[in-house]
Image 1 (cartoon, rainbow, N blue to C red):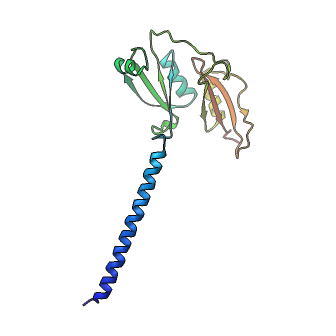
Image 2 (cartoon, rainbow, N blue to C red; image 1 turned 30 degrees about the horizontal axis):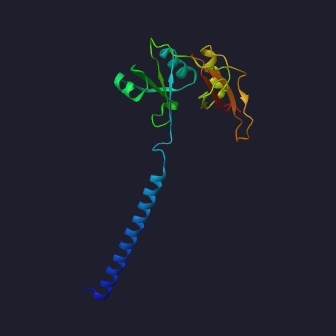
Image 3 (cartoon, one colour; image 1 turned 90 degrees about the vertical axis):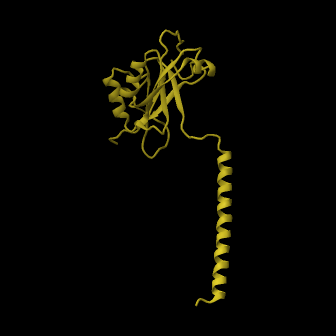
Length: 194
């Protein structure tokens, strides 16, 4: 037969440990809830929507030249677009592209509105107009990116593969190009054969 005093002590220790564990879990959950309440965003990624004049040409540019992968697409109806003021009542067909085909990361959403006379921006330089000026894509190999550009007949806006003037463990290079509508794209990355 077990000693009743030992059973009582074990029971008290177990109860104390359970109370401590419950209190600790409550503090952790409360702290977690507080941290969640302080977060302003539910996701650290962003999507960028780009209205283009020719959807096919832009999809080819962003996949074949920049190197994004098509990861999906969707349509948005006229009523929703009008009610939210996305458009003045035009429906949207959107193609989604992402770096490395990552559906959980940042995406570029391309859309064209045939028959709508959309204004082009002034993209001579990043400071030519107010607003969103350029996209930056971090590539694994700037030389491979340049080869894709040349294969597609795309010329750099300035010099190609200019060394970025920042101290980094591996030297980084930048090439600025324009998409079919003139939007500026920075390609930044190392030379794989350094």
